[in-house]
Length: 77
Image (cartoon, rainbow, N blue to C red; front, side, top):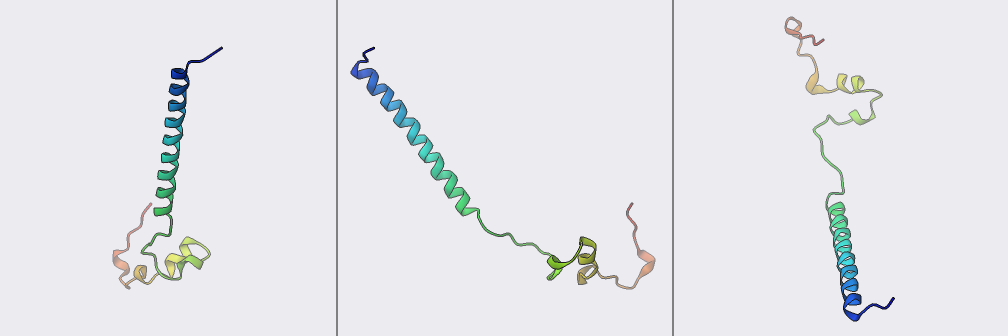
């Protein structure tokens, strides 16, 4: 089969366009991953990351300590 110059040019343009779109998508993905990489901040109490369980961490949290008024305890089932 012999292809004309016009057909070869169209095929080359399509392949170039697809390659350009793939390179742009790769660039955008890498840029997104670079910008959103890192740590996040929480409002957890200090030192709770080393507790054996979640219950032990919450028992030592000063914000959740009992104020001494047992008459207004709430129980969730």
